Amino acid sequence: MKQLLPFKVGYETYALPLIEVQEVVENQIVHPFPGAPAIIAGAIAFHGRIVPVVNLSLLLDFPVGKIGPRLIVLINKRGPVALGVDQVRTVINLEINQTNQMQNRIERNYIDDVINWDGEMISLFALDQLQNELQSLCEQRGN
Image (tube, rainbow, N blue to C red; front, top):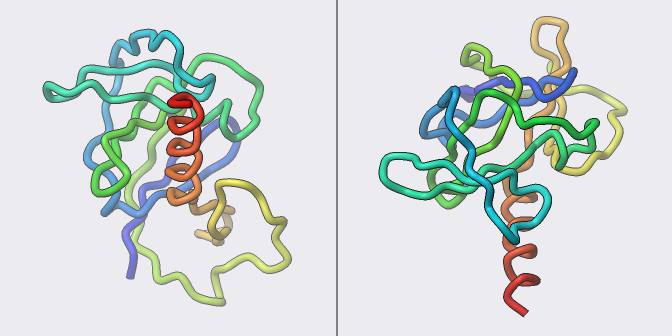
């Protein structure tokens, strides 16, 4: 059984493994981060650390706008980094298997899998792909 944290970006619902999430914060001031790649919306002060904020709306090719009012701060090997999202929902407990995995889904960037949760399609966000993208951007900036 996995615990997932569902969240919305634009009109789509995504989810992250709860074990990757440190905290969800709201109404943080996102400070500009001069010279950062476009997907980095800025940075926040979080428990005495400077944490970059990823604009998921831009990363996922939604119409460009402000980053969401809620930030999901990641931990473990992924963090510290915050993801700007529009809405965070209640944690769900789910056994992922063939009965709830969507069949014939389209391959998309930043999506590991798509599941059906009570009739709603939820895309499992690909944190490894995000981490690789951020690392690649940092390496390009270092050259």
